[in-house]
Length: 304
Image (cartoon, rainbow, N blue to C red):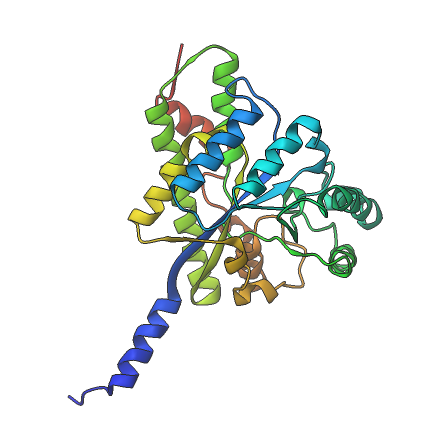
């Protein structure tokens, strides 16, 4: 059997590494979220910053819901910037572009822009609330063009989760003075989110033929403050590399925006759907409230 030239072997190895990059960036929506029964907003930010720095995460991007900004919460945004992390635009009032329509949505996004453009470490990325880009193709195009003219790039995601609902169950338990088993909660959070990451990476392999530089959608919530360090450690133990969002947004997928209405899930789901993959297969099983309720109970996290 003839031997492959060394250069061919290197090319195969390089191609294989591109197909299985297993790189992911962390982004957090809805900053600076108000106090909860579990912790104050100030404590939440401090915990998140400490965990990300301890894990030597190269950067994280916090998408700001601008109507949360006041004299107290501004301090938290300043802390994120001072720690070396970055801020981006997640609208002012967090209303769906599909519900508002292009003119009202753009007015809302611009209202946020005026509050954010002078923030330290602000990056001109915009993320749609609920990942809803508009109700039809003409609306989507009009909104995207106007945001681009304002200097914004698409703050898309490739990995979505229901981390917000997991966190809400923990907060609800605290509100009701129930006992929380934090070890079980940590295990549930890490395993559920990791399964979603692997699901969307498999979807990428199917839709793109490769593993892109992923962008994960998380929220600035109590669960993240408690367990983000554990999730990062688990990712690395499975061969994943945590990269900066700026690096992730250099992936060629950033320029792939299918001309379809289905953009409410994430970019990978939209691309897969444009290639004929049915909507019913584009969601991870955990992106369902009833599923999480059942699994959360079975995990024995909350006691009376």
